[in-house]
Image 1 (cartoon, rainbow, N blue to C red):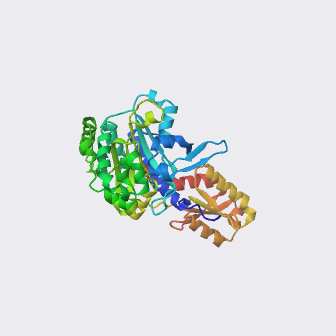
Image 2 (image 1 turned 120 degrees about the vertical axis):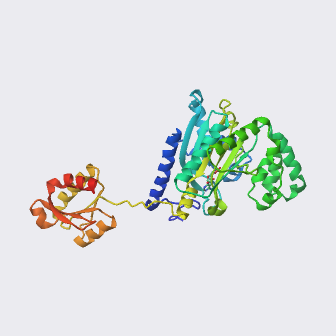
Length: 422
Ligand code: AMP
């Protein structure tokens, strides 16, 4: 146990970090294009924030939160998602006083006590967007386009964008009644959770993970029939903008998403080859959330993208670039008597911006040359006895095996030119 990471977590090893950084950089670049600014909130918050902000009848709150009492007797929860925290920060720092919209993005670890499997972990990473303060469908379209642009610019094809409208507090009550009528004859067959959700929040019955509940939900009354004029117009506006931008989408009336605070637009982007965990990105509008958490009535919309899932998709399609992290120079010094000179040369090169490595253990010439190959060094500097006696060293170009003698005092100047021109 001591030597394995807790179930559902994993180390991101140096060989994988390059892919993570590539993904993060792509996300940051596209956020800058769209004018979204990064926010970093704490990884834990008061439990109450998630109870209010996610909803007490959701799977996340009912079964998946890492909640504990801290030494000051406060109930604390490791964030299972970042929207509630971003909204809390928006209120705490009075960002609503700035001109709308407030456009935020985040990336970082989230924690859910989920059943671990491929693409589902207990500590996982999300990249996400929150756009606060604008009620119309144009911002809904913008964030969907941002998500699609990220995935497409990474080279992913065959993505499926599903959209729906989950209505608003005006039109949902009618749907709620219809849903209860629909499920009533099957009440006894529903799972325990759904039985308790039947009264509290019947919309949740539509996205229960229990396969039998899922079957029972087939043919359930669609929210579309109940949408009020405002929600209908909003949904039509979104569809028009997506069409204008040339983005394909599919309307899916069963897409209700796992969190309680969604109003109007809900969407998901799926990448089918990932199988059971095909959702790479999900989001929606949450016009009631900011008030619920204690702020002024403010509309908002956001999404979260599972970074592990995007990486799995990129890997499965061989879309990760070749990240060769070669060293510029390897300093070889078999005779420890010259080590101080070799060390000084290495440090000077590093101070001048080059990537430099050397042998720490005074091994043989052969072993040190092997080490130079291992780090894919472009150049090797050899501090041999004869050369050092003449204040010279051998500079070997590893690409073409050409060697020349250079003065120790010229090492930095010569190598800077070679590396930058080579
Ligand atoms: P959600 O916050 O549940 O809407 O999830 C948004 C996205 O985060 C999903 O589409 C997944 O890509 C990712 N995600 C959610 N839960 C997990 C998990 N346990 N492990 C890995 N990725 C996850």
